[in-house]
Length: 95
Image 1 (cartoon, rainbow, N blue to C red):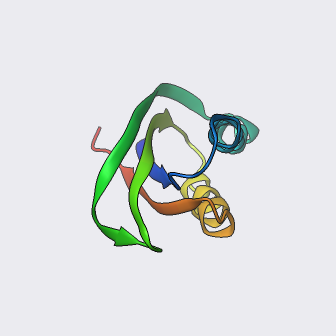
Image 2 (cartoon, rainbow, N blue to C red):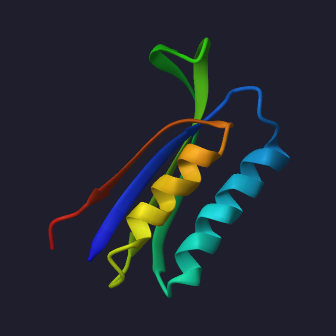
């Protein structure tokens, strides 16, 4: 099954913190033998509406393939526990 996940990191997070979050996301994926098909840093963008008093955020996109159904849930749990992540979305793609 192919999935894609997008998450937004707070604009005041330094590059080191952003890299750390991306490394942890990829760690969750590799833990379950999941293949990362592509990853993109979309950079700092203006949000459509304020989220937690932030008007901007750093966008990240990761596309991955996994046979383990619990991987999206593990990602969601990580995103919810990480204060620097403003929003996230993980979708299952059609084959």
